[in-house]
Length: 216
Image (cartoon, rainbow, N blue to C red; front, side, top):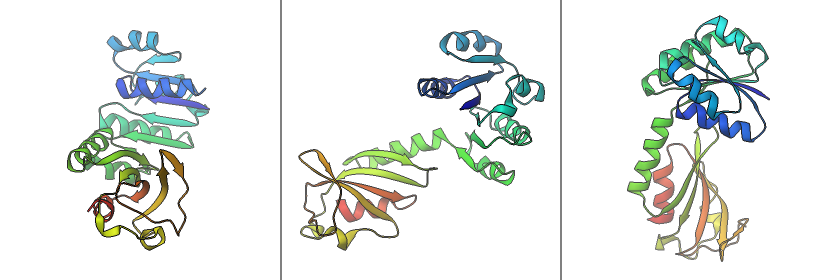
């Protein structure tokens, strides 16, 4: 698989290295000449120094052969314009980073549905750690439409209840329980108790509701 990444900042470099480790072919485009040399040293990939909003630079990166185009500069306008240009080449998957959430709608209006905001994701993650310190782990799921939460049950009101009485709902589903730190696939007849660790898949916007059920 061939991926063209626009943006040689920390997000772009980290993504490129992760994909290279998985065997992807990568070309990274970076407009800042001061960064190009250091990025080229850090990556086992082709690095093109140029403006990703110029057709000439995109074609130098063989954009027409790309399976994915990912725009992750810190400039929303650059990311948006590059995505619009790339759409003309029929790339199967286009992904854009947006720093300002107010700009997300602009991306969607031109047909860029895969829009990611690392800043908002990180802020939301930190907020949940602060407001719900007993949630053991949070993992973004899908396109950010859901999260997988690991938590320890602390709500005494659900003591003795079967999993089938609590899950699934329209907002969440219990996807794992643990016994002596070993994962078990939940069965409807299993009884829950305070201190049990569970994993649940929660729809976006239902975090508070789910944690209230299991943690009180």
